[in-house]
Length: 300
Image 1 (spheres, one colour):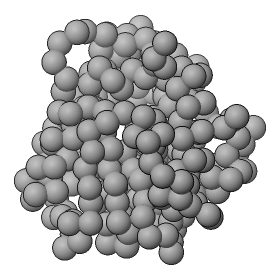
Image 2: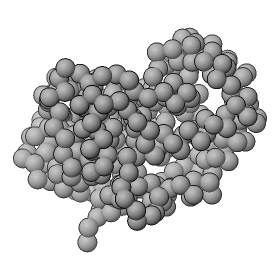
Image 3: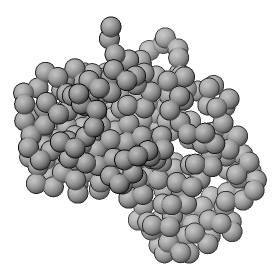
Image 4: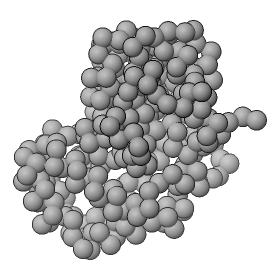
C-alpha cells in the first residue's frame, strides 16, 4: 500500500478538483538553513514557492522537489523572474487581514508596529494596542477546528495543537520579543500581505527543479548525494509509514556530516533541544528541528 501524504492532492481541501498553487511565497526563514548547511556542496529542499531554493543557491547546488506539478511550475516561473502571486495560503490569510480593521488593527497602527526595531518596545506595543480582548476572541474563533474544517482537509488538522489561536499568539509574541520587526520580511508578509519582491539570484542556474514525491526521489538517489536536507513541514498530515520511509531515505542519501531541517505546525515534543523555532522569523512554527542526519530518530 502506498504511504499517505495529503500534499499529493495539490489542495488544502478534500475536493477532487485540479491542483493549485498553494503558496505564493514561503514562510520559512532560510537563515536557519544557511547556518545549518554551511560548507556543504549540494542540498535538497522542498520547492514550494522557490524562496528557499533561491536563497540556498548562492552557496550550494540545490535540488528542489515538489509533488504538486502546479506548484513546481509556479516555482519555475519565479526562478525565471516572474513576480510572486497569491496562492491559496495567501488568500486564506487575506481574509483575516480584511477583518483586522474591525478589531482595531488599522493599517496605520500596523505600520507603526512594523517600523519598530527594538523587541522590548515591540512587546509593549503588541500588548497595549494589538493583543486586545476583542482580537483574541476573533483570532481564536478563526483558528478553531470548526472554522478550519471549512478550508482544510482532516489530515491537515489532525496534528495541530489544541487551542490553536492561543498557541499561535504565543508564537507571534515570541518572535516580537526576539527579532526586530523593521527588518523582518515575514512580519510584513503576515500582517500587511506583502509578497516577496526579491529577484532571483545570479546563481539561479544552480537549482534543479524536480516534480516528484520527495520520498520516492530520495530513495532512488545514490548514497552520499546531499549534505543538507530542508523538508519544510512535509510530515504535517502524513502517516507513520510515510515518515518512516522519509527518514530512511534521507539517511541513505546523506553525505557524511549531513544536516536535516524539518518544520511542523505542531508543538515540540521530547526533542526540544534541537528545536530552533524561536530563531525562525516567520513566527509560525512550533518545530524547526535542526540536527545531523546521523542523530535523526526513526529511520529503522
